[in-house]
Amino acid sequence: MAGPRDRAWVGPVALIIALGLSAQPLPGWMAPARPDWVALVLIYLGIHTPQRLVLVQAVVAGLLLDALQGTPLGQHVLALVLCCYLPLKLHLRLMLVPIWQTMLLTAVFTAIYQFVMFWINGATGNDIGAAFYLWPLASNAIVWPLLLTLLDRARLGRRSSD
Image (cartoon, rainbow, N blue to C red; front, side, top):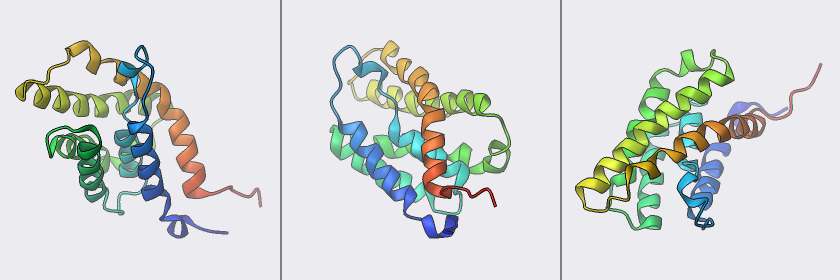
């Protein structure tokens, strides 16, 4: 049976899929509530695989997001690194809390991400309104249990009942 060390590919593959989901167009009514897929995957990796250089992955993913979305270079980098720092530092405590509390904490961590995005967009004159930064917080909390389940199954594999 393959252990977590044998499944080191899960983090980079999940980040590539998250980048793809972030680039997919959504209908106009649904676009403001797009989950922050890359931030959610990085939060998961910060909690469950803290030894895997999550902050470096955040920098690379942030640069790719900047290139995909045409934002100022480094905007997503700063937001993702600040968003992932707390889960990385608190990973031992966060692994013990129930899923409903991690849903709320994920909303808090992605609120940091959204605040940095709002701040930089306002400073560069690309303000789109504060209400559009609040919708992803709810969708992130809703999507978190599904993402947690999928990534846990991919990272840990199917557990045998032996």
